Structures are given as C-alpha cells and as structure tokens.
Image (spheres, rainbow, N blue to C red):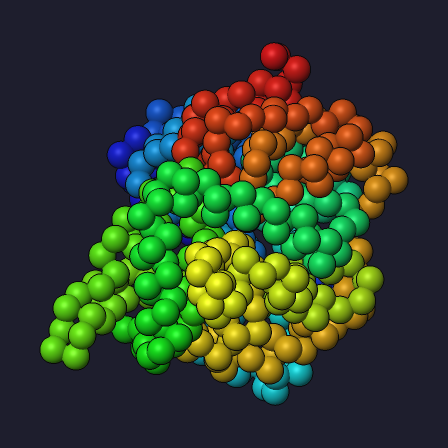
Length: 435
C-alpha cells in the first residue's frame, strides 16, 4: 500500500489479487487496483469508524475516474464514507487487457476465453473478496454509474448480504432484453438527439454533408494511424448523449476544413480532435465486451448494433447524400468495422468475432431474488437517456422490491458528473427514506 495526500484528501493505493476464474480459485490470479480516499480531517483514528462506499465506473472498460482533490460527487462522499475508487478488472491500473497484453494469452480463442471472465459477474465477485478484506465482513455501499449500475444490479441478484445500500445513476439495466432489443429501443432516442442537434445548430447539417462527401471521395488517415471512414465519423454521435455533447460536437464540426493547394482538406487540428474522440486505445474492453454485457444465454449477440443500424436509412450516408438528406450520427454502439479502422482494436478482431459468436453466456440477473430484495436502493433515471433506455430502467425499478427512483430531465446520462454532490446527496437521502 502507498499513502499520500492531495488537497483535502488522503489517498491509499491498494492492489488486490483475485482469481481470474472465481469458480477455480486455486488457478491463475490477476490484480485489481483500488484507490481509497478519505477526507483529510478524518484520516486519523476517525477513518476506522467510517463506513465504506465502493464506486463502480461506467463502461465497460473504463477505470475509475481520477480526481484531484474533493471534486464533484467525491467531495460529498468523503463527508461520511471511506471511498474506494475501483478499477474494474482489465481497466486502469488493474492487470491490463489490451492489444499489447492479450497476445500473452495465446490464440484468439484463448484470448476470448480469458475475456469471458471480465463481465459484471466476475467484477462483483472481485468486489466481494475485496470487501471482506477491507471491511472485516461488514457490508458496504455501492455507487454504480451507468455500467457500474449494471454491476450493482447483478450484486443485488447474487450477493445482497454484502450490501448496506445501493445507489445507481443512469444504470438500471433491463433484466431480460437481448442486445438486439436494447439497440432497437435505443434507435428512436438517437434519432431524436440528432433532430434536436440539427435544430439547435442548423449550420451543422451542411457541414456534416460536406465532411461525409469528402470521406466518401478520399481516404483519410487519422494521426494515430486509424482510418476515418464515413461510419467512423458518424459514430461521433456518442457525444449527443451527454449534457454538453451537442455543443462539443458543434465546436468540433465548425473547424473541419482548411484550404490547401489541392483544394479543401480536413484540417490537422480537426483530425487530432477526432482521433481523441474515436480511439479505443485507452479503453479497448469497451469495444470488445460492449455487446457481451447484454448477453444472458439467449444466443450470440452477433453484432446486434450493426444489424439494427441497417434497419434505419437515416444512418446510411451514401443513400442520404444521394437523396439530398443529412445523414444522422449513430450513438453508443460497436460495429465490426471498428476492428479494422482503429489500430488499437485491429489485432483483436478475431477475438471480438469469437466473443460475438459465443452463445453460452450465463444469466446476469435473478428476477426472483430482486423481487424479494431487502437492500435499500435508490436510482437516478434520466428522462431521455440516450445510452440506457428509460422504459427498460423503470421496468427494472418496478421489479426490484423497495427500489426508489428519481426520474429527472435535468441531466443527460452524465448526471453524476454534471450534478456532482447534489445528485449523490439526493440519492443517498432517497435510499434512507429521508425525502
């Protein structure tokens, strides 16, 4: 363990050895990294009396957010908790899983078998081992953002004895929807977000058409070596699901072209910003396991988002431009072509194909156990969340005994980041029946 300070905080870094396969605990082990955070004023003997809160980041594939001092919701949390910012297995400073390390596993089939242990079920079993080590067996509070909420729902299904309470922000999953059903539910929301964007910024319609026309006529390479295809450019629509995303997309588009001796070309600065938005180098598991988080033994996911995309002509750039329409941006989805356009993913293409074809994923949720839930649970459900279907979330909220919801259109999916202490404070109060 290493302990150090930031303004207002005392931080302790932990590394926890856990089994790769919890059903075979005597075999290979990996490491999970967690950062303990305590307010400076509670860092002495007081810390031992503080209850624990573990934070599960959205994703999949992202390590816990790195804070500097008591920023955002963390400042509210350390008022009453010892906080553990957990890098879920394969992310952040935990044992890495990426194009550089996965070849150590062997063939693509062996890599796929390894990555099958990186879903919510394994993450929760990691949490239970870590909890018993840190708390001496006492239950703790879980704060789950987005995919972290999916993990928290699995936690309630399988190990509720480890939970004092659960707080979820933008992450109540459907208990039964397939990947196809998730993406079909998402499509109308993505179309609405596009319509709202082009209503707010009508000048972006012409810019979008010009960029896509250029990409259809020229091969464009990003600074990191990736290929900017029309489909890759359209995937910038993932920005439209955050509170400031529509404005970020507009600012990105306005600087697209520069004049050159060979005619207008996409600006280096524009391509650099595109690279930062589109590269999966820092979070490859997001792409490799994205559809697997919805898989529950009802057949393979088989690139569900690609199939659903083909059902909506609004996303067909060539057809839209030929008809004088503005092609729409897509949303939070991963497609087979990601594994050819992005150098961080290209070496994992065959591994991703094998995971997409896998049919024997275990169920993640237990509706009967959730119907008998006794753990206090509160969840923020965002009224028109682009990433997590509101109807699915509310259906799940009704299926979990005692779960209390705060349904709001004040925030998009990033409400915990945007609303900070106020969001966490409201949900903690709701979970304690103080509202």
